Image (tube, rainbow, N blue to C red; front, side, top):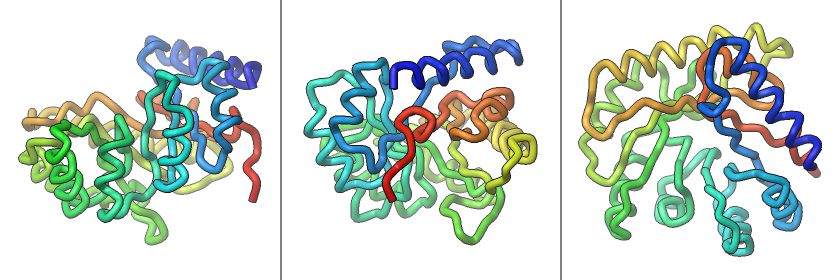
Length: 228
């Protein structure tokens, strides 16, 4: 795993340098969903510092088992409102806030533990019926409403674009997310920073970096194939 991790970090650095960005401005979120705690521990010991989880119950068990390690945990899966109380206790950053209803519940639960929860708003940039995320034309309004919630801080946007075999076909979607983030930043809303773009996975993260990604979510290329 150490070699695989090094390869990915090298590819991140090279992609950043190609477009004149500081490689240090891009962080790797190692997607550990369905991976057993021992495998994740191996990854942490190889140098992983941020882990991304998709399923709340699995994440709760894993985070408890690996609590001795000073890593940051990010929630990157679809989040239901009834799991908000666990999300604010466990995760430093929630990538997948896709509605005002969910944001209000996170705000309420964060207030109970006196926490200001960092979130990203998930954008369904390809407007695919099968995917979660707010549609592009709703995002500004949702973020404007979320900005009034005292216990949330919007740090940026996340997307899972349509799947293509070619990273070049995905590039326009990454570019569109970057443009949307820039437009929202100009509105200078309270509790909204817009300094993160979570986009790009194993097959297309280099294109995402070239279009402005600050967080890339990579699992298979680090941990290997998942069991079905």
